Length: 505
Image (cartoon, rainbow, N blue to C red; front, side, top):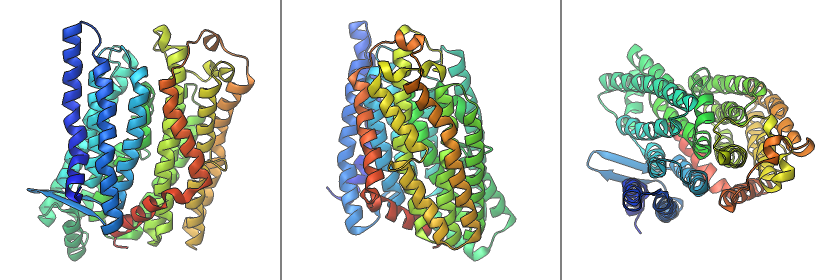
């Protein structure tokens, strides 16, 4: 398979599968007068498995020859180190979420819409990270965003879910307007939309007031989706009210894809790497502090995990900020390593919490949120699921030898090795916040193992093996990457070099 064919199929398979999944589900409903979800579920899993084939060939071509380029008329796509890492993460997490959701979403009204929209979200992420010009970056960004709006509000009959979807839509749509204005100003000043050509034009012409305005607009617009504080206010409601699989996608890869869009766009218009390094590190510190402080006071499990995503994004920002500020790749490699580990840890946490939510509430036709007190004694009735949730939470808290510790450690080491006092101070602050995060992770683990079972736990339904299997895979990966971090070095090192190339390193 040629590189161009692999890149084409990587986008074409999930994009083409989406309408097929929806139509197959609707036809099944019409002909059998019952749920058409079975057809949609099977096709969704098969589509993502099929997409792994061109991704494998694309990865082989990338490792042997470098970045892959695909030109279709005026549309140009390129798979570099960042694109490969995010695409692989999105597909693996998406496959786990899809398999988990075959049971979680079973018999829900509109199952076929859920799986079709999930395919569109995944292809939007892949297209976004491969885009090489501002306009197509925005188009793929909107594909991802629109599908996520609808998935967040999937339980539209529930007032809280509908409110979360509308809030997410309003804030993200406002961000999209800012992005369009930023693109328009950039084009008006430079006359081009290609990211590399924009950077050359800005470098030659200097930072004019128009370019400065464009950079601020792009920062705000993409910053909403990347959940940068104080642009994060949509996130707790959206993550807590969405179906648990979508919560895992939003936290595990969607906000990271938003960060990639932010880095690519602003990296083209902000030519000073020190200025951009300061900004990223400042946002990293804000995310760490605000995310942890807000998570400490939550009583709902998914809402607590949502705020912790704000904090975990802070570690990614710290690693990338140190790399951009010093033009050293180690921090970026640590940041991208944390992208991978966070997708696994937070994906496992949301799916495990979702499995318990399903067993304790949804199986009883109760859509109320799962609270921290509901988890009392969960390990006695659900030892396997509780164990996987505990591993994910402790990994997020940075306990060795789990993956979260290793990715954070790589970021901290990079900050100290830079020899820069600002970077050193920032990683010390990040390390303190990592300890602080145990203030909400550890009590939840303690409740599951040391408290007497709650009424909901005693009355809970069994958890299907279909929900447990993705947790087995993700937990095994969390442990494996904690023990042997070089497993993903072939992904993180090229991604770090691609990031420095954006900022002229």
